[in-house]
Length: 70
Image (cartoon, helix red, strand yellow):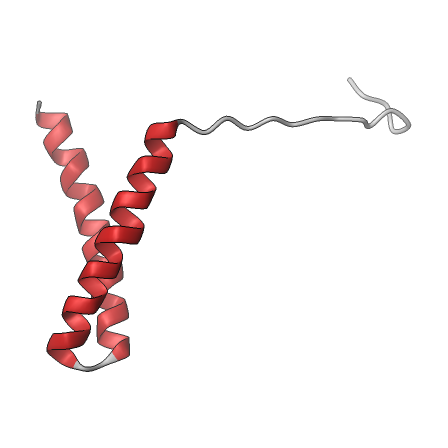
C-alpha cells in the first residue's frame, strides 16, 4: 500500500485494435451516413442527430445479437 508521501503511480490502459476499428466504423462512418440520410429526408438537425444516435446504438445491439447467436 502506498503511503501519502510516495504516490508515484503510473496507470497504463490498453485498448484492443478491434475496439478502435469498431468505433471508427460504427460510430463515425455509420453515424455520419445515418445523420446525412436523415438530414436529407427531414431537413431537421435535431431529428437527424437523434436518428444518428439511435441508428448507431441499433447497429451495435444488432451486431451483439448476431454474434451471440453464432
